[in-house]
Image 1 (tube, rainbow, N blue to C red):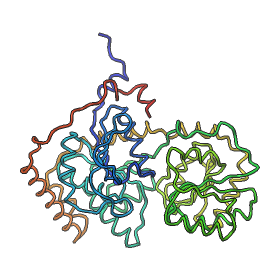
Image 2 (image 1 turned 60 degrees about the horizontal axis):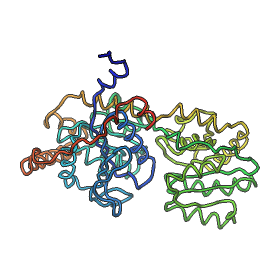
Image 3 (image 1 turned 120 degrees about the horizontal axis):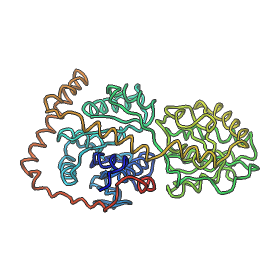
Image 4 (image 1 turned 180 degrees about the horizontal axis):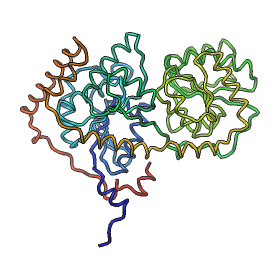
Length: 454
């Protein structure tokens, strides 16, 4: 028999993981976290791993669903309570999560997003049951307001016992380390990526006689909707040939509509409402400039998608945004109206030198989901090599979370452990039916097929 080639040996030696992605945020809801989980899962499947996703129910979407490439999604019967988050229950999710862990023979539990209740509870239960745990943080938080103080303490509790954490930018890593107290060597930086095949430029370059500025964002305070209310009238006043297209919905939409009425800009500001993900590209390629007005951002996939479509980006200089694009693809500004208007003026002056197709090729080479999956695979391998610890060894880390909080966290984990032991007696693991592995023959073997699927 012929000797195996080096790539074949590498694939054969690669450890196959069974990964459970957990977050309150997944399709049919749309956002950066949802896209990240889906694209990463698809590429991990193409690398030969089994991936299962767990989220809460959305409307009548409950139970088990299958997506492309055999991706399995558990929509557990928990209803969203606030901003698509489920109500914290601490222990009520343990029975159903335990069943999923055992049924799917999970080896790594991967939680996403710091303010996802399901993510926190899954990490807690997974560590109680001895599973390896990885956490990805997608957002930045402050340190002074009540909400941030509360969230930071919750994060400190949840991450006290994780094997490793992933952040989407270096700024996000610094923020997470400071908020959670995690050792920096446990935190890896793996940026987001973009599906270059889905976001490609318009076949013909747009005429610059009328300049179109595109905004696609949730219309909420954190995304800088109030900043747009100040910037748009000023830009329209300075540049008669500029028109705005605004895609997205949220509580701040009314303010933007009032601004449009007040300044009589109905013919120059188009409000599209919520834009389905499949239609985002068609909106982007109708413009010359993409405007991002976020007040805080760990990475911002939206500006990556816009650049991949060949748009010059104007963005606030916040969080991890300066790390995303090369200087010649973006004009950064402070999150104040006057500086944003000046940045838009600079961008308009630079438009003649922009080559959308060259920009697309650069982004395609810089950001690949397949590369993100490979780097995430390394984190899983490291998590698997972490030594097993008993409850007493793990409790010492929770005690270090604070004089009073540490003791409270220990009590929470002890109760979780006792509840798990009760469930082990009530329904032994051997009595839970294991799901047969139905991965298609030839799927996930790496090689050319993997590259095409990602």
